[in-house]
Each structure stands twice: as C-alpha cells, then as structure tokens.
Length: 381
Ligand code: IPM
Ligand code: MN
Image (spheres, rainbow, N blue to C red):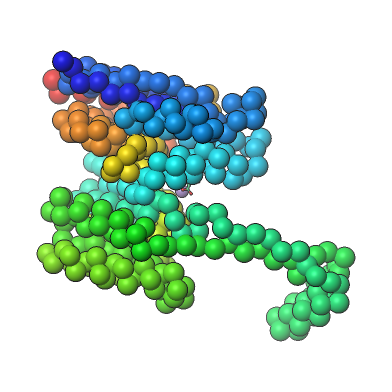
C-alpha cells in the first residue's frame, strides 16, 4: 500500500499563498515520483480570516491540526492589523501549542548564488542554526505600570537632563514614569532538550563543533544558566567540541569567518536575530527556510521571510525558501530520497541561473521558478 501523509497548509498573508502554491506543486510531483501520497488540508487562517471572523486560531482548529503529519506554513503579517496580534495569535500559538521546541534553520550558500561576503564560496557557508523555539523573551510575560505622580516624574527627568546635558520640552502632563517590562524565562528542560538536539544533529552529520550563543556576561541569571546547562550537556558528547560565543561577537564572526560554524545552538530571541543575518549571508531572505520541530509531535515548516505585503499578488516573489522548507518537511516525515531530490533540483536551477526572481537579479515569475524546479526533479528521473 502506498504511504500517505496528511499535510495541513496555512498559506497565510501577503505573498504566502503564491509561494506556498509553488511548494505544493513541487512536493506533489516528487511524491508521485517517489510513490507516496500527500493529502493537503487547507486552513484559511491569517489576516483576512481574522478581519472577517475575529478568529485567530481556535482550540478546535488546533485539535484538528494535531491529527496531521506536518504543517506547511506560508507567512503572516498585514498592515491593517497591529503588529503582534497575528504573530502571537497564529504563528507563536502554533509553535507553543505543538511544543515545537527546535527551530532549525540551515544557512547554506548554494552554487550560483552570490553572497555579499566577497570571496566566500558554497563550501564556506554551510551551517545549521538550532534556535530554541518556546522560551526566552517569547513566553510573553510582562506588563506596563502607570506613572505615579507629577512631582516625581519631573524630578527624575530633570536629573536625567543634567546628566546627559540634553534639553527638551518637559511635558509633565504625560505619564513620564510609566514603565514597561518583559521577562525572559529559560528552563533546565527547555535548554537541555534543544541542546541535545543540536549535539545529535552534529553527530548525525559528522560535524565536530557546536557553538552556543548567549549574553552571559550581562544577563547573568538567564544566560548564565543556559551556559551552565550547555556545559553539562556537552559532556555527553566527548567527540564534539563545545564552544561559547556572545551574541554580539557571533554577529561579527558570522560575517568575517562563516566557515568556522557548523552547528549553532541559541536562545530564542538571539536565534531570531542571527538567522536573519544568516539568511543574508546565504544570499537573501528569498532562499532561507526554517523548520519548527517537535521530534515527537507535529512539526511545521515555513520560509523565514515575512508576508511582504508590497509584493503580494504580483507573482514575483522567490518561492525557493518555501520549497526548501518543503524539502525539510519531507526529511522530517522520513521521505529522505524525496527531500534530497527537491534540494538537488533547487541547486540545479540556481546553478544554471536562467530562471530566477528579481531578488536574485532575474525577472522570472514565482511560478516559473516552481516549474523549473519541477522540471529538474523530473530530469533527475
Ligand atoms: C521568525 C519571525 C517570527 C519570530 C515572528 C513573525 C513572530 O520573525 O520566524 O523569525 O520572531 O520568531
Ligand atoms: Mn525572524
């Protein structure tokens, strides 16, 4: 009997639908050639659905999604909606509900793509970023406290003014001593499981080093703890060298010596930041995929770019990040050969250089890139 998988699709906002369509096209072809079936179930969630119904992502939908083998996700974000609502109500809800504690983001320069780092070649830029995906500043603990009184407000601002020699108009009618705080949380279990994943990944791929990112020199409580757990987890992997980098330093070294890095494990927020940097050194956001993985549950695959409302509906966006995310999906459900075929086809299309979207200096349409990748898959036979 042919193996079948149920894949939930949330195309989302902006360019989401058009890039995911190409991903589905590629995955359909490769599944047919590799003799397994993909049953797509579509979900309308995103900005339009929210504006029409007021629903972000309800418990019933989450329960239904739980029955799928994987989730294929486009992107969310819409200028009509205040930032944070869709992000928290849909994307982060999915990551947290399914406890997708690993955010795996390959940073790999493919042949035929130009990196802004002069002289770096595909063999120099090839690493995996393992971003912790359920904790840190993303837990959403925080609040705002209103200012307490005009007198105190004024005093404090005067003092600051003297200190910094700044002159400005002091409007004591405002709540100048109102404050906002946001708390990051890391747990032992949360750190351990993502760190083990990073070491296991290194071992499986024959890598020799895992770099941990933190800011333990300033945020000593949280990231000092992260560092302590990392040191302990590393002891279980004697053949792999553990290394620490501060987050500011790694931003510098990733640009200067990307070839140094093999597997990077990082707290959630630093991971968010350094994978955008990673996307650029691999040639741009149009190429960068991400996998939200729960090794024992439902995982979700997405391009790491946003919904790019400016380009929505134009059919010009690069679908490669989404198609590559589809290859990661196939790898995670155990269809290794199909996954490799998709990646090889992406590589072949980029190497050839004839069909490419505007972000890579070409004029091709989104669907032409999808078609070219499909043709390559068929050619590989
Ligand atoms: C990402 C995105 C998300 C994040 C946003 C949209 C919530 O930037 O996947 O990197 O911060 O994780
Ligand atoms: Mn991000």
